[in-house]
Image (cartoon, rainbow, N blue to C red; front, side, top):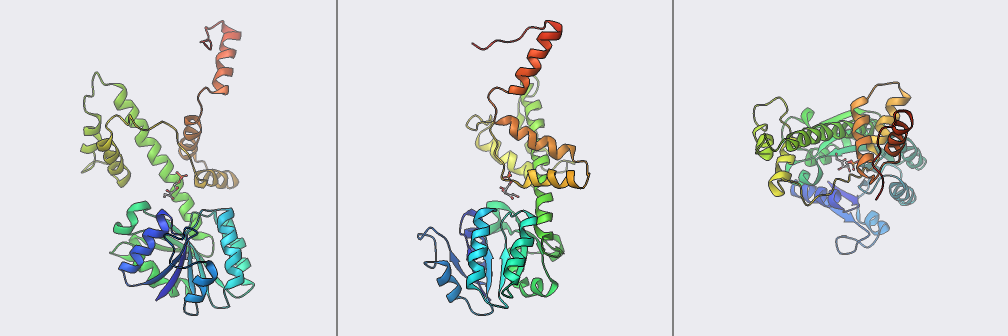
Length: 295
Ligand SMILES: O=C(CO)[C@H](O)[C@H](O)COP(=O)(O)O
């Protein structure tokens, strides 16, 4: 099988390597000519055998919109586009509808595994029609870890279901990370009592109820920098957590833990919270409680 990949960033380049290592021929296109196999999207499409399969691995939102729009002018009836980026599931409906106008098929694929996926394999959750998912199965099998398919791959439903599942996956990811992080702060706070914080996390890796890959990654981070002295407490987000909460609100599903995790990220970006200034001012107004004044 020979497929095209559009976007050879951290994820796309690793996927190209893993696919090639597992017997799939891959031609990759990236705007960066140093890493691209071809000079443009049109050349990529011309290189692929018909009916073509093109895996899109570019940032969600406008960049994906532009790539899908361009592909819709270059591809023909019977070709297949797989969006493996972290697109919002609602974008899948528009992308599949646009491609369908020229008879091009569409699958959305949530991909998990990060930069480790090249060697460990990627977890996959896909949405689309059964016949197109079957057609792309050699690609999915090459990307996922060895072992039972249903432990690393799911055909979650129709178009949008793959990215919906990935959105929920990332919401869970936010909450798990936040939970380990709060435990880290509690342990670290009592340095009069706990003398080996990295050692506590290390010892939780085998046999405990809270063992996990995220915990192992925290152990790795603490091995590299035991006090996290070289990292600022500032955390970005790329959208999946916000969409999770928006979806929860739309469906009246309570997600207090995931919500707290994303709001903790927002707090991390503030030097001096206007809201907490207001709370301090109010305590001062009604109770005469002291406020800490700006220098
Ligand atoms: O999908 C991922 C992991 O599963 C990506 O690493 C994603 O960027 C994580 O989300 P955020 O950037 O919002 O923390």
